[in-house]
Image (tube, rainbow, N blue to C red; front, side, top):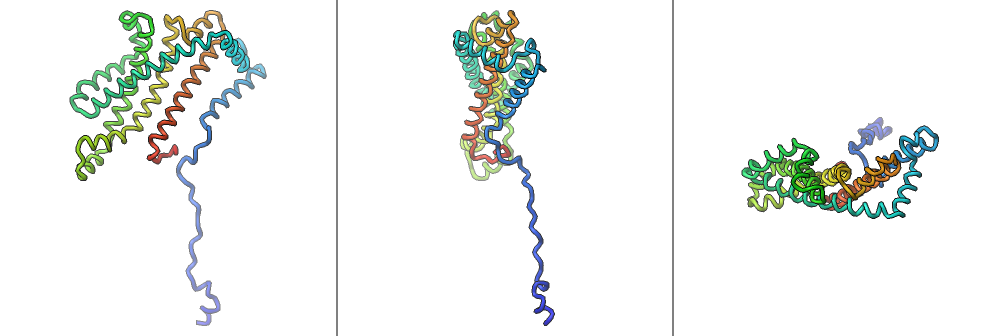
Amino acid sequence: MTHVLDHPVAALPQAPPKTTRKRLGVGKPIPYGRALGPLLLIGIWSVASATGALDPRILDSPWTVLQTGWDLTQSGKLPDSVPTSLRRAALGFLFGGIAGTVLAIVAGLSRVGEALIDGTVQVKRAIPSLGLIPLLILWLGIGEEFKIVVIALGVAVIMYLQTYTALTGIDSRYVELAEVVGLSRAQFIRKVVFPGALPGWFLGLRLGVTGSWLFLIVLEQINATSGIGYLMFQAQNYGQTDVIVVGLVVYGLFGFLSDAVLRLVERRALSWRRTLSG
């Protein structure tokens, strides 16, 4: 007893040392982190141009491209071309997004719809939209309708695939749970299927808006008389690489900004989700 009283600490069990365990997630998002990559590329481009490592005959310097962009803006060529390109991309994205979403809902929520629609869309997916250009020119001519239809067809397939996959990928355990709690089919679709498919639908929107710009770049260099791509095509004939780069930068900025807007809307609409992206 005396020995225990003389050494009270030794008589008590020792708590195990605390260890800090590193979290397995990717960490907090970096503010404006997605701009770091493009800024790094611009920095490398600037250094290569300033040191002479990049031949200006291959690619003009960033400051030359900025000056060319300013000159095109002052002359009115760029302000006249941008609205035309924006209208084509926006209308094609709108019509294609609506068509793809509607087809996906019909096919994803009905076996009859799936039998009638899914096979047809899969066949269309195997045929590139740009491969339909000769046929669509014969049908629609080379006007605005032709360009918008090509963009809409490409976007519709993208939207359909993502939305259909999201609708049919709902975990079957949710179906069993809905049956247990007594949800009707309409309630199940409204409260379980549509919320569960929203992430896939937003992914389709982001891929679709990027696809609309990709299709537009090609279309505006085929029998076009206006738009950013037409400026680039004209610059190609005169070897004006600075004008071509200006057009690419404008396309890239519009694609980046439209994707950023959709990311913001997605984050707000899906704020109830907890994901690694934060």
